[in-house]
Image (cartoon, rainbow, N blue to C red; front, side, top):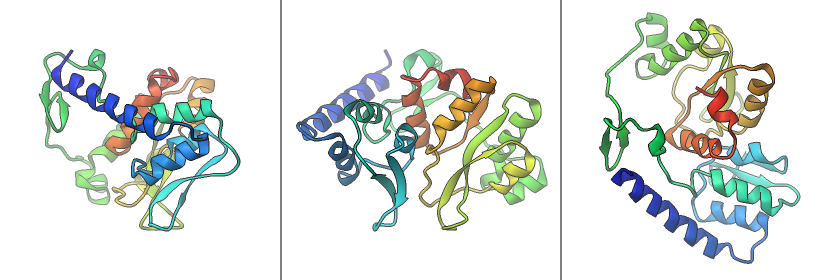
Length: 231
């Protein structure tokens, strides 16, 4: 097992042990609230996708955080804790890591580094950082590798925020082009995307922050549809 994975596993185990101690005797609702009040929530929205009783909303501190209506059950809360990127800090599983890849103590596993930009002038000037992710999203759709893209676009209600969206064609992707540096619950509808992909046997790609990707990777441990349908 790589040294970085052992270190990450120890950190995760320590965080989990501390969280379990803090949450002893609490209700499921209180357990979720404690994750928020201890600064562990990043507002990714994955908890909303796991329960109809949770809605990630703008709160008084200017961020998006989960609000609960009704009562959560402990089983649902256990699942949330297992996938929340604020409570589980593990990196890429060793089984998915190339043994020849470099490992940086801060950045983790590095397969290869590239300096790249889109060769399409429209994409390069419309999107952010040279339009690399926008160009890749367009390629995945045009080539048939993916049927849709789950990512974020500027919020129509709060322009400084982002909102999750699904792009199925070039116009959709270009409409969502550009990085979002405000709160964005990109994963709030991820289960709906997985349901669609499973029912119609589709493939999709996900574009999000490293923490969002970590949450999706955590979900893959308990929901095999992630590895089956998400590129």
